[in-house]
Length: 258
Image (cartoon, rainbow, N blue to C red; front, side):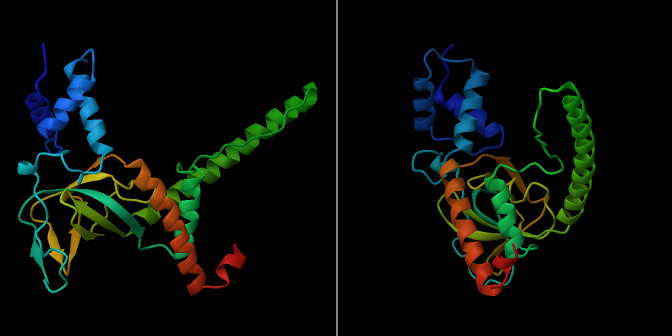
């Protein structure tokens, strides 16, 4: 049974994402030959949407995509509330609770691929002598146990500290309008290393806006995941450079102490 573009768009929209444009859905369907089962097609559509720039012309259905109010970024508006749901993508994230050098170290760890906390891999030399192998095995077990204990304590400390973190985001609606989002109440889904650049979210109606900033809480936003690979790479490289420069200016001795 053939699948229509309208059927695909309605199904994607029913799963919480913005409705794709019919032309985009048609192109996706025609590119899959032979046609996959419908659930697989829906999964492909969702995956590609989450990895795309939502401001791209022809990607989303223009009639069902609502943007922020034109004056949302105005500092002259003391406080108001969002009157409708708005789909957005993340362009920047900053942990306001950490010093610049702490942020540098965090980003350098992410760059090295060390995003998982609380675990450590220990590599030891190997030998041919049976006694040496036995000693190495014993040492490896002891060190692994110690690393697990230290990692567990570090993970617990990080989790406790994370409860008090405050992040600031730069988010963009589907029409390209940008605004700050401030974490008013802790949202576990938001953190450097977890929240990707280009990640997609829904800001819900009723969200408070104060002096041009969205006040984000667990109840007024929903994150879908996703990432724009080029944005993520560019952000990581430039963010590290800006933080290092700013940290060196504010504390010239910090780099020497590292």
